[in-house]
Amino acid sequence: MSRDLAIDLGTANTLVYARDEGIVLNEPSVIALNTRSGDVLAIGRDAWKMIGRTPSHIVAVRPLRQGAITDFDITERMIRMVLHRAGVSRFNRPRVVICVPSAITAVEQRAVREAARRAGAVEAHLLEQPMAAAIGSKLPIDQPIGNMVIDIGGGTTETALISLGGVVALEAVRVGSFDIDAAIQTHVRRTHGIAVGEQTAEQIKVAIGSAWPGAEEYEGDVRGREIMSGLPRTITLTSTEVREAIDEPVSAMVDSVVSCLGAAPPELAQDLIGRGIHLVGGGGLLRGMAERVAAEARVHVHLVDQPLESVVLGAGQCIESFDQVTDMFMTGRSSRRR
Image (cartoon, rainbow, N blue to C red; front, side):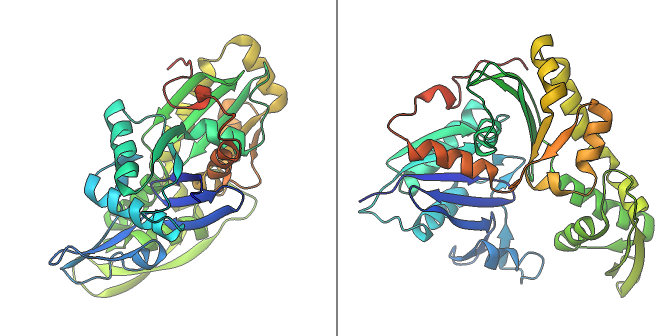
């Protein structure tokens, strides 16, 4: 018997929710390929460990960048292997709900649907990530109440104001956590003459990165390759230095939230004063992000209990009652103001 599946096809991570089972897969959205033979060597966490550590004929790539498919064939192969890990076979083809950024174009939407069908899904429906995040955060989206969700992913930041089951105001920018990592890499290279990899930049962000000054500041040693000599070198970075380095992408995220608030009808904006804004996504875990948004938006910001899983959990709630849920939540049916 086929299972209904919900897939959060994120730029950073791919999560799969199976009907009646819950989350069955949570892996980085990375695939490792042998360019000589075309074989897939690994996907997920195993492939993520290979980034920056492979010989020239092996590449570890992310097939999605800024919420969009950059390589259709590789994405299809990754979805096929994800479905296989979730127990899908040629005799067991599921109906699938795929969570996608609201910023993707109609062409990109068709690409995702086609990739899922060719990978083994009998049906492929798309659900916008802000709507899924609101459902997964257990917000009363079917009520005439303003619910605002900020979803900061690896490649996009989306802010949506939802009421009566529809998106009233939406602001989406193709800036996310990977842009913060890139800003750290650029700063270390320009300021200290040290080249560091993607994984090292992410470790710096997690260890000492922040979007807002806190009661306690941190510092840490960073090891990398000196550009001039090519030799290994260690430097020390502080929280203040990293915060200044990542200010540009963080400001772009916060500005999109303020812009969405500016497009909100007065009555719904009034609701947010009491209810606050809900923050989801891996980027929301950046130290001080909630405080930074709250300070500039002048509205309290809550980090939800499961920020990394809220999107796939929301899609999972839809497939639990697949036959009863109408397509009002599916991409293209909600009303919005951009």
